[in-house]
Length: 419
Image (cartoon, rainbow, N blue to C red; front, top):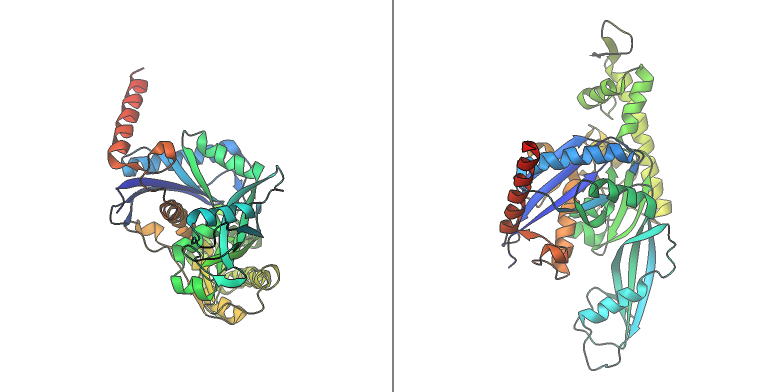
């Protein structure tokens, strides 16, 4: 049983910034008590292109989440995604000096430490070193070696690294708002945490997150993230296609996509009205032409995701659990049907789960990463024995401590207003 603590997370995407505040109850139940979602600026394809604008939208998201939660946000887990993420496989090995003693948690940590890449260049930063499988004295397929006996312990890990400069820019945009980044979390891990069931992780599944600026393809099997790759295409590209095809302002094209967009074939000549450039009267767009543009782009994105799984991730066949689509663009009607025909495997569209108090607007696939980064950060701090410590040790504060900080913060705001 853990004490009741507060946790927070920030997801800075190409199209939106989402901040969440949650209570982890003593029973282990996670409940959202505050959220702040604002349109993103200063980001392009998952990378910071204007740090001042990113800092401003992060501040707006933090203020909205602070108001709704009634507490300050001194630290947060930060979702990290974009073309600067890379994955590789690393191996570590140790030899036990006492065969009569069982393998301990410290032994496992030492084996993982031996897998830590010593040749990481300064322009790369290690985010995660995740165990995939263990081998004991040549016996493969060990899932948890703790308590077992062996002379040799080998571990296979997946190493996730990020470009140091893009990562620092993202962290700096957050910490300029007096919020400490407790831990950066790679977005493929976040999405998987929020949407996958245990069976899917075990037997194998391909997760395709159709984000605003990028599409992430991640392969899970044997209960762990196995590999991941990224495509520089996302939901924003659908909107751009409509804007260029029909000569529309970006905002009008986005509304057209959200209100009438579909990846299904449309045969009727029905039209919809939209505001175009330099027009007093509304522009009429045929739904079948609109659907044709979106279907072509959807086919391209899904085909690239299929080829990425086959070539970059080395999948000779689709995993038994098939494909899970998530992200904002996954909600477009017809995406699941189109994916089934292309992948020849089971396909489902997934939204965040396993969390209470999530506002209705945040229950869709577009917020899988936003919710997942909070769940992943909390789960891994608990599983590594760090839960319940003080903020000085980098973990959640109790409710009493949070409210004390909130009172101090409000007093400081009152002083500033009085001055």
